[in-house]
Image (tube, rainbow, N blue to C red):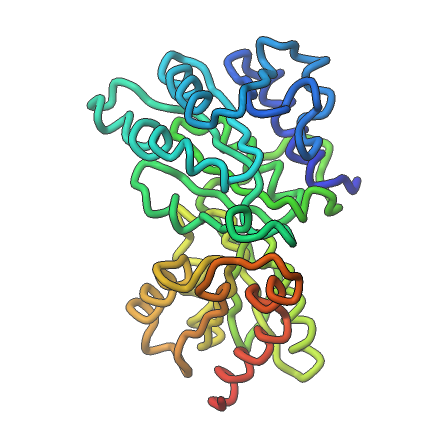
Length: 327
C-alpha cells in the first residue's frame, strides 16, 4: 500500500467528493490562491475553479454564516478554519444555527456541512492559539465531532463527513499534516461513530484520540518492555462515541487510562470515566484514571508547554499506578 502525508489524505478526500458531487465546495482563509495555510488544498483551485474553492476575508462569523445558508439550500460546504481557536468567532453559527437547524425547522431543513481545521497545541503559540475543543463541540446536540490521528482515518472519515446529512466538526492538528501513513488508492469510507483498536492488549486499556494517540502508543511500547500488555483505542469520533468498544475492552483488561489534550474539568475523559464506572464497574480492578492538559492557560515557553501536555512518561506512570495500585 502507498504511503502519503496527512495533508494529502485530506486533500484526496475533498477532491474525490467534489468530483463525485457538484454541490460540494470549499471555503476559508487562504484555501485558494495560497493553496491553503497548511497546503491541504494545494492544487484544488486549478482543478475546481474559484466558484468551488473560495478564499474568504478574515471573518469567521461571516463566512460560516454564508456556508450555513448554502447548506440549507442544497449544497455541501466544507468550511476550513485556519485554527479552531479562530472558530470561536463563528460559534454562534455552529451552535445556534447549523446544530439546531434540523430540529428548529421541524425536519424541513438539514445542514449537511463540514467545519474542519487544526485543533489543540502546536508548540509555542501561547494561550490564545493552543486550545483543544473536542469536548466543547461534543456538548452540542445536533453536531457530530470527529478527531483523527493518522492519514488513513483522516481520508475515510472526511469522506463520510462530507456525505453526512448533519453538520460535522472535523478536528485535525498542525503538527500532524506532514505525518506519513498508508492509504489505499481505491475508494473507502470509515463509518462515523466507530472507534478503532490500534493495538491489542490484555492488561490495561488506554483510550485516546488526535495527536495524543502518539503518546498512548508510545506509552504502550514502553510498557511492553516491562511486560505490561496495553490495549490502545483510538476514539476517532467523539460524538457519537463508540461506548461498546470501550466497555468491551475494559471488561477484558479490567483497567482504564484515558489520555487527552483537553483541560480536566468537563472533558471527554470525564464523560468516559463516568460511563465506564456506571456500565462496567464490576469489571474494574482499579479506579479509572486519566491524563489531561494542565488546568491552566498555555504558556509560550517551551518547557512550560511540555509540562502542560500529557506525555509518554506521565502516561506510563499512571498505567503502573492502576496496575500495581501504587502512588
